[in-house]
Length: 65
Image (tube, rainbow, N blue to C red; front, side):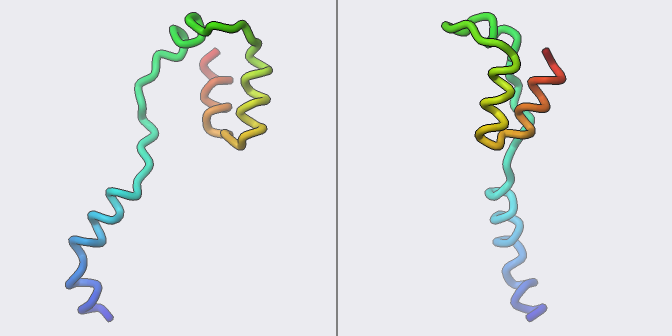
């Protein structure tokens, strides 16, 4: 089994790289909220994040506004 892993190590690394989710996306969220076509409150946005289980997004938004 060790030989099988060693033989396919490059494929394993490639698979891991393809499966990674990149979270460091540069978004100017202040400008985004300023340009929103509809008015809403921060609490409403956070409730939508919670409703869709976007916990990381909700934490980011609440700590930056």
